Length: 150
DNA sequence: GCCAACGTTGGC
DNA sequence: GCCAACGTTGGC
Image (cartoon, rainbow, N blue to C red; front, top):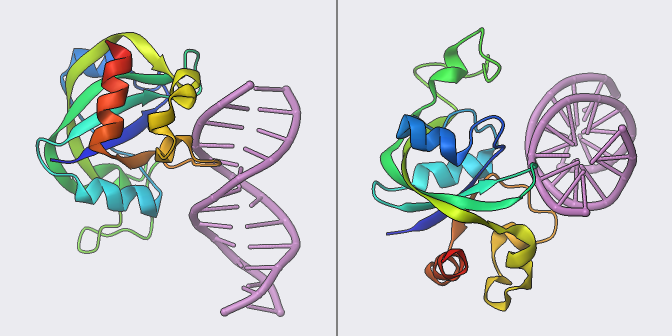
């Protein structure tokens, strides 16, 4: 079982939205590195759910991989903002897994708190200039975040 | 709202 | 294949 972190702007789709919907397709990722991580996700993997941009910034809860990555339908939809004219059904470019709600933290584990935690030094999220919206997380890092949340 | 960091595009 | 221009991300 592997651990990941996905970013979302809460006014677009928050952990509370995921709680309400229970399962959602993680569509709209248009970065190759992030896409490759999405494709590596296996059913049952654990995903830290990160709220970006909006205060409080940080990990807001946990999701799990419910369905492994399949072609992202938004790439084929001309009216969708994520439409990609270079993608075809025969040769899709973008993929999305389904994520399932697991838990919303009572209090968000903030970015500032995480920066102060020595054991998270190596976390991709905290590396300078990291804008990756889908990232691998080690078990140790996952455990540390969970501990901070409790 | 600002801006640094980064990714992508496209002319050459 | 280089690189300038441009667009986006995301913390502050």
